[in-house]
Image (cartoon, rainbow, N blue to C red; front, side, top):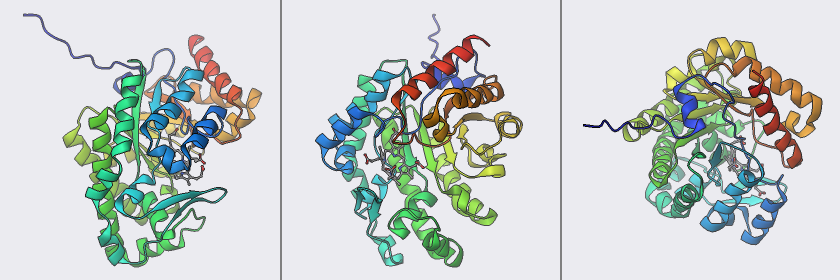
Length: 353
Ligand code: CP3
């Protein structure tokens, strides 16, 4: 009887989780779809508001594909936003020009109890349809990444009502009223699990969890509100979808990246650009896959500065389990030619290795 071999990986991205990189590392860029592309601005104008774009599967697929038409990238990422979760749970979100996200603030535990996961799954049906259509539109060698915000980062927006520098309200709940805050985090753990699981059912092959504000908490807060909820999310997803690799972007986690993947059960960590390369090779990449970590400001600058930074990253990480990426999202005023130059640098450096 012929043994049917299940292919270990169909894409460069999935292969990266299974074995150390050989040849060119896989490459995609956080916020690869967005305002730095003129064609994005055109589609965004056609859609109306930013959330109208997120909830329009035809146009959301279009903007997700735009960077892939220009650049040889190994993955597409669902076009959506982390704040569709509060919007779906019943806390309306809007994006204001020049301000960013604006939410009606959650004031108390009574508000937490109004949030509804059933409502979210219905509200976000167009997002899952986008995933489905996007997978169908992509070539087999391009991986599809689904994503979600993590509970702590989502909670900061839900409690503050907008982007903040100081996190007064988030930290107030996190440190002064931990038992009450846990009620909100509990809802968000369930919401993130259901949201990511729905994306996998629709065709997402890799998941990334964004905890963009993980770095603002102290040690106790980091364990309690970053590691603990994320560990529970990952454990639940692993029972449902054991084959799907999960990446965690815990921006600003610094030395807490050591052992983080093992503590929360993820398959890799996305590093921000402040994490030292040699340290990360020894303390992080020795145990898990790393993704990152070019400074998006250096991408915007381009040229020799970018060449130096790209070479340093490749020298440090290219021999292990590695996905090339930025340390944070592409800036809106980045020249698209710099992205093309970056893709060439990664390719050329790797063929010379
Ligand atoms: O291409 C991709 O990476 C996929 C789409 C994506 C967006 N946001 C689209 C977007 C992803 C993965 C995100 C994640 C996200 N959103 C995060 C986590 C990552 C990070 O950057 O730290 C956070 C914190 C948000 C919340 C958010 N969304 C803010 C604060 C803002 C306003 C600031 C800004 O950059 O405009 C957004 C808006 C947003 N999300 C845009 C895009 C393309 C710009 C909207 C526009 O067209 O005006």
